Image 1 (tube, helix red, strand yellow):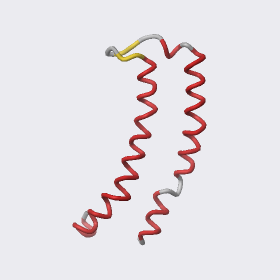
Image 2: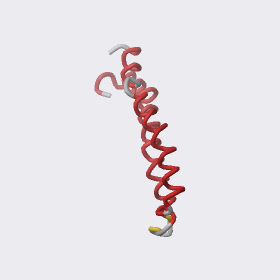
Image 3: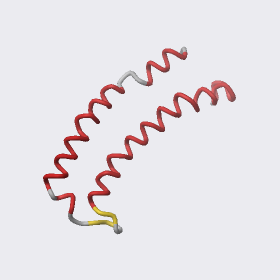
Length: 85
């Protein structure tokens, strides 16, 4: 696969993820501020409010790592190890 095609394939459906995040994060924030259910309880000394935001941030971090790997690490591995990399 050519370099341009591989870059296009990486971002082919990412607009959908960005749209979902743009809709879901403000909605979840509004629910969490008005519900009150996120402000009760804790696990291992970490409040439910913090667990909620940790669960939102983890997929975002994984997406960043995936894009970083495909754009920087994978081309280097192919150059060093060939198709076996």
